[in-house]
Image 1 (cartoon, rainbow, N blue to C red):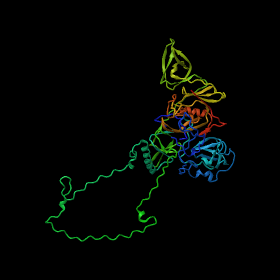
Image 2: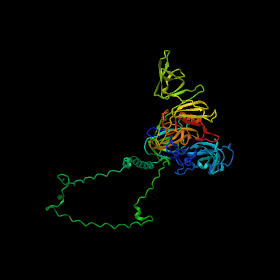
Image 3: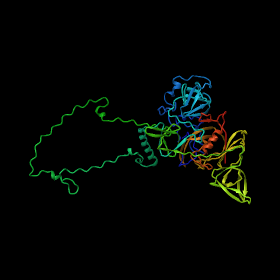
Image 4: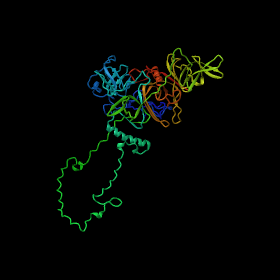
Length: 583
């Protein structure tokens, strides 16, 4: 599980499948980092690949990714791509055929990796540049950077390359880039193509074995009806002879009744039985073993199931991201956004959750706050200094405040509407100074672990605030606390797979966690669609945000991500925003 981050917040019975494929096998993007002290055991690779191997049908072949048909090689084999040429001449059609296609700063395998494309991304590319460790050549991208045709970029000069069952592009203008489904059955198979009837039957037997091993129960408890041993037929009672007399109790005929009597006529003489004719000559033995081989059935070769290479069997509680629903071979399938297939009977669509903070206008200033009591009563101060109840606020409601005041020994916060709310019912973020070394115009993010509040600043001015869920209290063996310190975002990804295994929460896996901003090792700011516990500690170390808030930060922070890319890494020319985490 070394390819994924482990800091998601849990829920739904140890929530929560990530399936890297061949495209991520080279660790494209940010280098894999070791798990930090506050995270669970798995580290993160900045990009995870598709579930499917090359959709050419060869299970282990990654070349051209999911691109199929003659167009997968059209740009190379047909000689349709010209050598050389400036970046301005974007005459060729490019396609990301791997789950992940790395983007380099220069046409050289040793060059800095700037980011990556996701499976199915289409864009115009320039003319071929040979050398630099890429056998099929480099191509300049319209977004900047270079991609290698030997590492997943499919190029055609005449038409857009063919892609079998392409995934939909992520919804960048919405809080949820994809929809998700929740795996409801243990050991649900995930395939890299829809399985046929024979493969599905074989998978039922394999699933039964896995369930027997997981539960310790007999195998027969999990076998499908068609595979269960049939009971032996009951022996039939022998019928009584016609005309014979039944025995007194059991209905059996009397053996003495068939003996001849003294007055019976002698039996007729019969001719002796004729001998059977001699058997015909046996057929001559053939080269394959003659008579001995004739009665033997040919042994069937075992079926190789086309299961996802990385995660063939999903646990109950895993999340898969969806590209849509399809029907094949009389079976309905979820087609995942990463190229896999899961039976619709094994997973159901999940209603994603959200929370949204507040963008602060120039007219708004601190103090501000969020209601954290279940309900907070709202009062107005009367002329006789008595409080009049005028309404209530719900938990997580935002309140624009003016100042703190005291009424008969109790602290209240005065709202901009002139009303009063008890201070103890609110969480009020504290204004933070500009971190040393930052310019007055720089964007930076402050995370307060004590209050579970995040504030985004431009210099000294707060421009956005929201509630978060940071690392919960773990144990000495498994610490989950979010680390404190100061860092810069080193990698941003529109979505990223996250999974792990912990002694306290078990296994969990989520495909395409949205709006991910890594700032230290496997720790990240990211959207969490599986819970709405913001304002309370919950995660395995990451900073959980409502997907709407995470999206706002993703587009506001740096490094900036070009439109066609699925992720970008900080560089000298595109540095990451500062993140400060404190108690």
